Length: 564
Ligand code: AMP
Image (cartoon, rainbow, N blue to C red; front, top):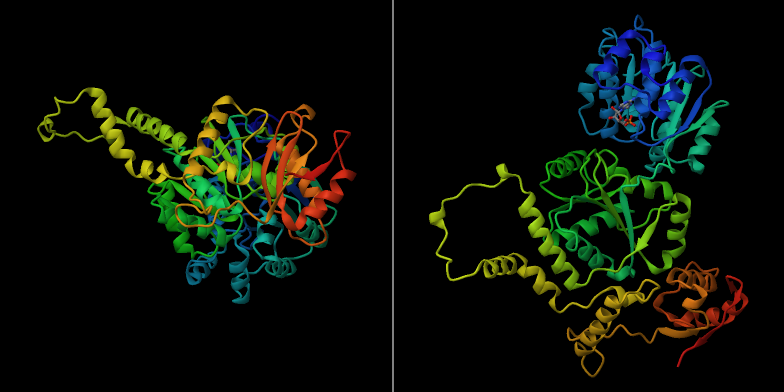
């Protein structure tokens, strides 16, 4: 089945999707359309948004729906209002030429009375969010006794948003004879449990998830300690001027904190997460779409409702647990034929998680160093010219030459210099006395540690010493971070053993993993030709000493001693 015209879908449907420009079914449509048209079993489909799953379930259902009946035959449950509106809009488009078919969307944050009124028109299709559907059931405004098909869309998200009880209540309101289709981007325990309890002998399909890594996205990661993450984020933003990006966080609180930090530092940013009211979320999304803000800080769930194609960067402020989520987040950039950059901030103790993501997704993620002040200024100068040279003519206003004072005493170069200095003054002042970040947690020495980096680090060290007074305090009066809490170890392996920083992190994590959840703090790691040095929190000294000798790296014995 390579063309829709080869399916058995009715002419009305083919006409409607033809007008939308659909010619060939997507992978998931190829699998689900014939299945739904001919099979009575339930279905579990592993597929993400963007694979064409709405059409995958709704086209065959529209083909079979009874347009002479005025009872609800299809119920689609989905996690957010945005998705709800999107799905109902798609279904309305597909059923454009089916005059007697009516679709109604019901979701929270909007007048329930209006929705009740619209239900009185007897739609055959309901698309709803679980909370609002329950409200309407309680008000006896919904009757599910004649349902043929139930679709749980983004089941994983509905469960992670805490809709478990609502789903179970709704499922128990629907007849046993219905056919249930569960769509989910990931398969976790909760989704398995729901499927086990509410689906019968389901057929399983899986499409285009993890292997569909886009090739036009460059992946980078930056190692940085927890306390310096926001400052590191600021540097990544400053070093990538003219960006239009989403910054992904794990929790609502983290999202708000990061957004507040950016706003306080003068960036056109805002937060998008589930603690905001629907109206607030709508406003933020609108601002972002119109590019009134160019940085959106969001949780995974909240960002799902947002469909923008021109993101230049995706920043993972915190790594997700699930490698698929990493792919999904990163895939928000590099759309519509453009290149994209995905940047992840990782804490030293997250080396294992990063490895997992790398091996599950087969994505090449390269380590980069947090930009220095010089890197940033250089990038900003480039950014000014990029913007100047690509600005659309219609965006630049005309003004009278008489407004410009006499500048004949300046050369062209002098003028450009002055304008740049003027434009970048605040940024240059901010970074003037700032230490660089990369080395504060981890050594930037690595196999691909270039001469330029070496020179830069040396200069930086000098600068740092100059900035401290004789009592070892920063000029700002903060105690020096060189810590009594850390122990420096000599380690018997080095570059000749193909030892990398990530390996050392892994070794330390393994050696210090104990019953308690507390993770050892890891400081500098310095890998030299024949041996290395690393720093670990003092309270883990004994674990390092006693566990490392019993471990091996590429078959080699390991030894760690406290360095002088
Ligand atoms: P979904 O995964 O349902 O959110 O769909 C992603 C996008 O693909 C939507 O904008 C659909 O309109 C579009 N789409 C779905 N199926 C097809 C198809 N067979 N051909 C072209 N576009 C499609």
